[in-house]
Image 1 (cartoon, rainbow, N blue to C red):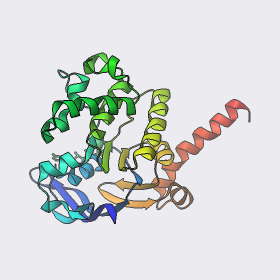
Image 2: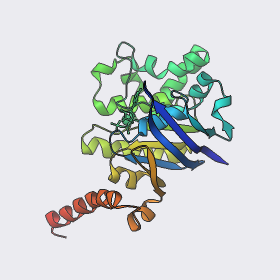
Image 3: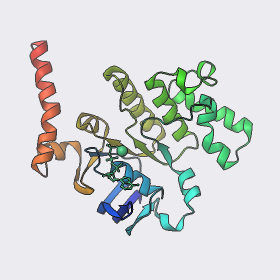
Length: 256
Ligand SMILES: Nc1ncnc2c1ncn2[C@@H]1O[C@H](COP(=O)(O)OP(=O)(O)OP(=O)(O)O)[C@@H](O)[C@H]1O
Ligand SMILES: [Mg+2]
């Protein structure tokens, strides 16, 4: 059974409504990392938001773990799916622990259980609970904030995690560290992840399969090897030249 399935899903937004996503067919298998790649404005965030019913479908359907999301109460659905928001988006006046405890609070967990689990997920994202629990987001580095965003998404052990540019806007070293930690974490916990990125190198590095969106349409889906070998159009071919060019430059610089 697919962990996530979109079946001809379309979304229109605004007044008057403008079509933002067109007939998206997409499935992610259990435990798969699916990268959602596309230029700014191509509809990546809208697609994630449609999965947990933050935006309604105009046509089509979406299934999570085999259940039609239209038949799941929206709040219950959102609480069952991990969501890492674009730009970490932590509540600035809440401590790290309060931020991470958002979902347990809404689920009505006992305080002790929440507190213990907050320490566990902080350990998972490699932030020392003793040091970070009571800090406020403003006192954290960008990378640390992203780690808190990931911890918040994982606290209730979701089997599906949606991540909106979780490693965006970071220096390359921090980004690499976070990517490697994420891969190890996903392997350990085995959740299905949909990871939005506009960076093809990141998609190639992280994903089992890559889905490419352009102007609200799914233009190609395949493994990194399939996409590198047979890009579906000239735009994707062009996109692929970036990592190749970078690799070439490195080889020249290092004289190897
Ligand atoms: N509430 C809304 N009303 C009208 N149009 C919207 C609304 N939300 C998004 N859009 C439009 O839908 C399109 C897709 O937006 P979306 O935020 O999904 O893009 P994205 O791929 O996530 O871009 P980015 O990489 O910049 O985050 C854009 O043209 C955007 O202007
Ligand atoms: Mg976006």
